[in-house]
Image (tube, rainbow, N blue to C red; front, side, top):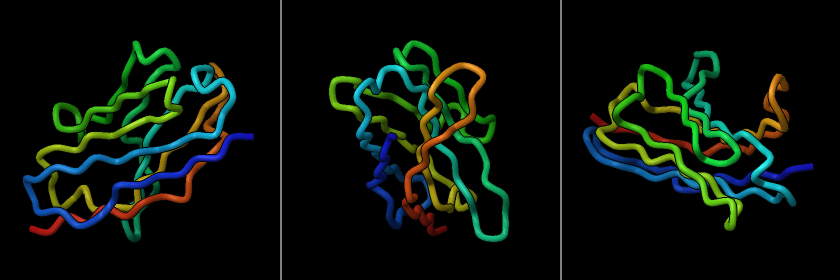
Length: 119
């Protein structure tokens, strides 16, 4: 069982920056691929970014590529999402998730943190 707790959400002006954190209670945190997802009101949840267990590989949705950066520190059991040049359309609840292994889905989810971008 893995518990995930996000923090760092809030209100930010368009063009500004925000850093989200996700703390995990996993014994072997490095075994999990980690992802960030978001869900805006009235919309389906969408993929934002993911990072491999070692941190050597990262993946981004086209909508955030070049603006957001995902990173992790396995010694701290933490993954971050650095959000730069935010836009109004980035407003959503952001959740982190853990994938136990290749071919498996994201089985563990945090409760989410609200990000609101004012224009």
